[in-house]
Length: 422
Image 1 (cartoon, rainbow, N blue to C red):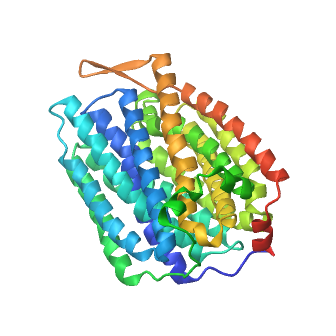
Image 2: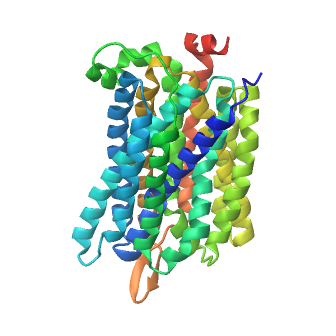
């Protein structure tokens, strides 16, 4: 049965902080690649390196900040100050020039690592731990269902309101607007966000940081680590194509109105995810993972064959609906399996499995497929490589591996989840 109703104040902060964070992550995860592609270099290896470096920085920051927030018993300060600094760093992207490619690439990578560390501290470590503190096993499906839609809603906002700036080359203003909004929300959170007290872990700070990385901890919490392994597989699959998706739609499919395509996909998939969140609470998040990942796999196949605006929109809705519900189901399962005194620390583990592994492995797989296909187009006399539909086949091959941890998840008992559900 569903748990207690989520109160309006909690919903407000979940949406405000979650959506603002995803606006900043949209810049980092998708538009920064487009910025580099359009103004600095078209090398898919550089784009993959950018993604992997930021993932490593974000994961390290989350491990350190998550353990610190557990021991301090407070998340508000890290959220508020982190959002302010995160916004300032995002705005700084617009100041990077492209006079020398090597220098520009180096500066972008370093700045991206700093931005990712600040964003991970504020959003992935502190905010996500705060959500775990503030919810329970009966309502996390609904909350994570909404959270799963926010990345796509953020993309929709950016595409609808700010994409004309990028198409016109006004990158400095584009980065300044997103950075300014992020910083402003940080200031508001300082005065308005309230804490939910949780028990604090024993031992030293270093032991808290390393606790989740120890084999003995994995043996004590097998279902948690199996759920995280499933997240790693799904995340790696999406990162095979996601960093190149805008370029694929715009350059390979030659769809000028790609913003309309993406907006339609995002709205359709978001509606499915919000409705699906209630279903996750009713049937159980862990039980729903495999079916919704199956929907995602069907979407990958459909996207491989899709040509033209309407087929791409249809395939995109199926793909992104399955992806978002898959993330929501896995995320809710991970929250349900999280020890009460380790919510911040588990965010560090989540970053390892859901961000670091996918963003290091996935983009390089995608880049290898693109290089192997060796398709290109000529723009102003310059030959540029272009992504091909085979990135979706590669993503499908990866996601098939999710069956392994999910089958084990069904067979392994975990006293923590049984106690939480009782």
